[in-house]
Length: 285
Image 1 (spheres, rainbow, N blue to C red):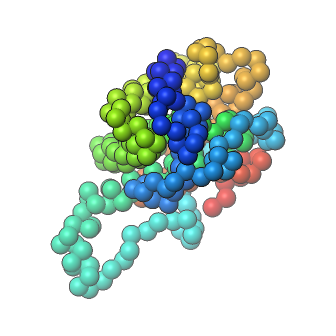
Image 2 (cartoon, rainbow, N blue to C red):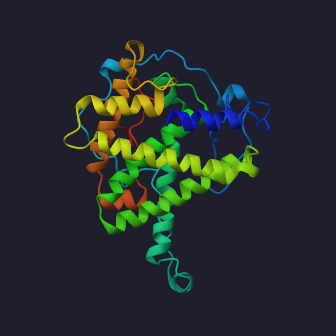
């Protein structure tokens, strides 16, 4: 994975700056309300920061018993389809608003917003002492996309089809972000590079959770895909503690998602485990 990232970032750093920041140093994902609109990049101090030593006690994190990530019926974070009656419902039905495809697209939008919500928040960078750069944010985005797609795939054909809609929204979002940064002339090339990285990472994560995989394999995959800057295959002693904590986080999210019912997954009415709490073990809804 690293050689492709290196080539991409070296070339991107030679192109037009993004709000006067070299792209190779800060190509951060943009906070926004809708996947279809990209906002201007915030000031560097607000959206780009170097890794700081985590104040969280990683030894006590991600050990609790997995639980469903579904939002409670009365949660203000839930997203529900509007319930229209009478002529309005008839018109919307004629316009295929209630068709399977339309419902899937709406659900995929909500699912992707859940991914962005976890990846865009400062907490995940603070807990794992990560620098918020384009490479890092993209790596975390791919990780959480994999978590969702893996769970959807478990629901069979319908889940795979919904996962394809989620992927298309993700791909459109990444393309907008790259294009907004001024990489229009090479957009197709770098989107292909990012696509290769996406699928390469997903294959590696899947392999690390196979029954025959060793317990350390997921830790090593996370190190290579997210933490490593020098191409090493195994974490060094200084980083091992943090990488192992992220591996526990990933395994716990996999288990939690497996306990999350189909309706919550297909509608997007779930939330990843919040990391704002220092324990990150109490899931508040």
